[in-house]
Amino acid sequence: MEWTPEARELADLELLLSGAFEPLTGFLGHDDLHAVHERGTLADGTPWPVPVTLHLPEEAAPGGEVTLLDPEGVPLAVLTVTERGHDGLAAGPVRGLGAAEHGPFARLRRTPAEVRDLLGDRPALAVTMRGPLDDLALTEVTATAKELDAVVVLMPLSYGEPGPAVVRAALKAKDRLPEDTLVVSVPLAPREEAELDLELREHVATAYGAAEHLAGPEPVSIPGPPHRRGLVVFFTGLSGSGKSTIARGLRDGLLELGSRTVTYLDGDVVRALLSKGLTFSKADRDLNIRRIGFVAAEAARHGGLAICAPIAPYAATRAEVREMVESVGADFLLVHVATPLEECERRDRKGLYAKARAGLIPEFTGVSDPYEEPDDADLVLDTTHISIEAAVSQVLGALRSGGWVR
Ligand SMILES: Nc1ncnc2c1ncn2[C@@H]1O[C@H](COP(=O)(O)OS(=O)(=O)O)[C@@H](OP(=O)(O)O)[C@H]1O
Ligand SMILES: Nc1ncnc2c1ncn2[C@@H]1O[C@H](COP(=O)(O)OP(=O)(O)O)[C@@H](O)[C@H]1O
Image 1 (tube, protein in one colour):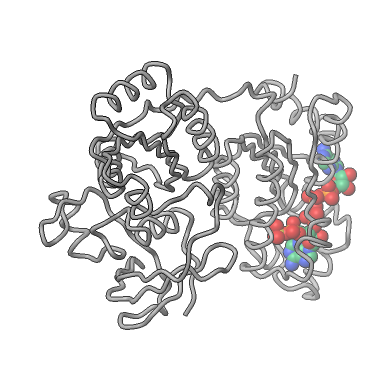
Image 2 (tube, helix red, strand yellow):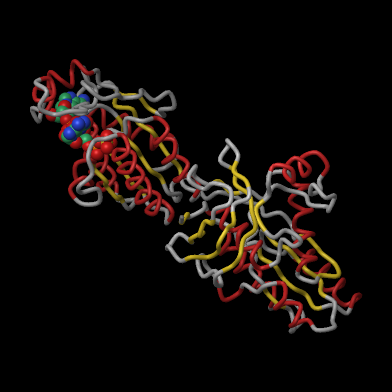
């Protein structure tokens, strides 16, 4: 079978294949994970600080082989499954099929063997970075390299959203370091516990042949002011609750102010194009919402403001979109248009409730399909007794008081 692991698993896979995680040759099984957790070693006593795991679907049974694909569908490796637990965690050795090309800065990746070759007999001073090197760090690196007569190997840990900025910081730092300084991009995902993260960085540096390892300063992340940050305003509610009407009013209000670019993803419009052909089954509704979330997050990644107005009946899927948006450094505002079913049905603007009651539309939200009320809404609006203008101005007010518009 074929399987595309998650971003973090793919990053670990790349390090397993390149030899950066030596002595590991595959994803860890139960005994190794237990030993890592208890003692910071593998089951055989070899020091190893953190779990390196992979989730696989049930079809991946022990004894079978799974071809692991990158997000574009390119085969990266074959995993021989030795274990698969009830939690979905699978273990087994991996065999590489080709160099990984996904993710930015592929040209700056080097395997440990390639770096050791480049170094020849000279010792290396590895500097792992998750943020820029300040003057103090640069002075320390220069002095240590001189003392050891070592080649500086800058290793931007290029995983995830901050990855490209860290690589740029490394290329900039290289200009202020000895000429033979190398920059090697390593997609090492951060581990939650700082101590274990540092230990893992030491392991990777050693695999790259480092005689000495320095960890660069932790990045200071100062989020930009809210009026420059990306924002997704996500309306959810029953059909006829007023989502599109308020969303359109909000879009026009923002365009009138003129201070932000607006991407408008109305539920019906999305279904005519981006999600054309999808049904109203749970799986298709979820896919529809994920697609909307993906596009909205892309707009917000570049500091844009996206307005979405689908029913989005499932809490878990809405939470996924929130996560998608926040993971690109943007903000997410959930507006629950909580007009009760009776009022939506009384309006029945498109005549759909009547049809649903007559059994002509199956799986109709609120009638024959669920709507999970949000308990994490940032704003709740019942439009039964308020004007459209009042509803729009409440949302604009929330955007103003959050600082997203001025
Ligand atoms: N079975 C069923 N259930 C709910 N809605 C239905 C259904 N069939 C068609 N429609 C029309 O589709 C619009 C909802 O589409 P969404 O993409 O917003 O729905 S979802 O978020 O994927 O659940 C919704 O539009 P709005 O009234 O704008 O919400 C309906 O007009
Ligand atoms: N305060 C209000 N806010 C939004 N819509 C309202 C309000 N009062 C009445 N309505 C009416 O309710 C209907 C809502 O329809 P629509 O915006 O298409 O809902 P949805 O997109 O949630 O299906 C419209 O006919 C609109 O004129």
